[in-house]
Image (cartoon, rainbow, N blue to C red; front, side, top):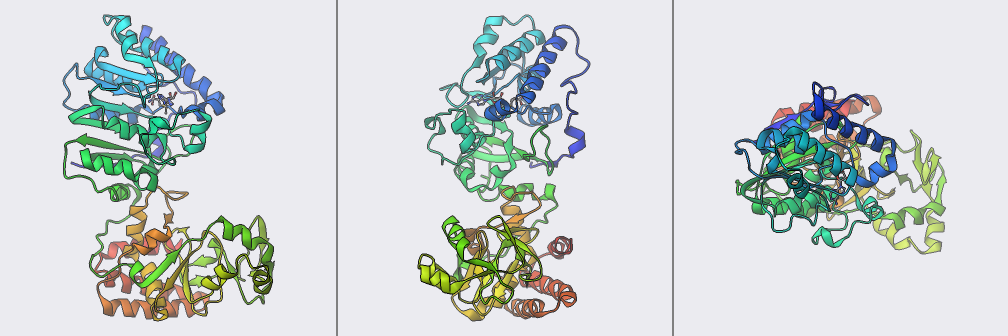
Length: 504
Ligand SMILES: C[S@@+](CC[C@H](N)C(=O)[O-])C[C@H]1O[C@@H](n2cnc3c(N)ncnc32)[C@H](O)[C@@H]1O
């Protein structure tokens, strides 16, 4: 059974300084207070905390993880937290399987010392040297070789490439995963080798694990070994001191059917109020009709010397902020490019051609095309029928093989089921959870509609929407959305969701 749980911010966040656990007594209270003090002291040493990725887990989330990962485990079943910090998971797990059954590692010796003390306070009958042998100062990515646990739980550090390097973390412990794979996903990958068939891995992850390209090999490894059987995720941050959104995929080894590596985002979509859509296959993909391209920093920086503020300029530079659904706002709102504000950024094409460097690039872009903002509340795209505009990174270009397809492609970007599909599939990869982010590769992979008649109607409406004056555009956009919902044979719920997002 898959349960999707969206928790609400207020119910899980502690106030700063609020003790981790209440109603404790004696030694338990003293050691829990030591964990709090350690955590508070890390919070004041912000650089160190960031370097270590030490953001401790709220107790409600610890309880949710253990309810799902340890359900049905007999006392004594071995449990591991490979990045145990001051032992919040270990103490809570010990209350379910016993102190002698829990194992932990962390690089922070003070945190490990506190975790050991807390476990000793839980059950003074367990020898201290047993606890010391099972809760160790070690790198959780390389310790525990050859060991098997009934469950691996916890909240491993979230460290991107840069911070990993600052932390001096070795790249060989990364087991051939890409340099951009977040450390937390490497912990998840490693944990799959540390549990038996039927065992469970439940590690807190950044929301981006659901869809990030660099976590793809980790999701594929999960599909090979088992399935995501439960998922916790929250549309709001629950970790004090960081805005990072998180989730907990509960992976059961040997469970089936395997979870498609590209479908984790769809599992979380309901918690973000994104309607479920099942796009029909078989009618082809956007990539069959057009070439989708992203530009790079070379083009961005290369353009800087040739951009002027010129409302009469024949070659507008189109930044993301200027692209709305079926509308180019160039000249009507100001925008920023290369740290400067422009009312009407225009490219001096003669000077650019004389310079030579970007001449071929500009010629390739100055063709009839669709320009798509890489990120927005919906997919935002506009048709450049004359081929007169140049994209500014990260605006994407969609160049149809046949210019007659321009408006049909615009209609695809305005199709609510397509936008809901992209929002779910690429959930957590945008700057904010509310934004729909698409890359050129992802645009090319969007499916085409099955109902040709409704698609043709949608294309005509999309053309009228782009031609309309401001006040007249909304009803035409709405009509396009309805026609394209029909073109995909989709539920009207996706239209309501999309229209709600467009209107805001
Ligand atoms: C996010 S904290 C979580 C701690 C604990 N799981 C909890 O929620 O209470 C991550 C912990 O990972 C530790 N850490 C960082 N890199 C590590 C590594 N390579 N091996 C083990 N622990 C590591 C940090 O010291 C920190 O205590």
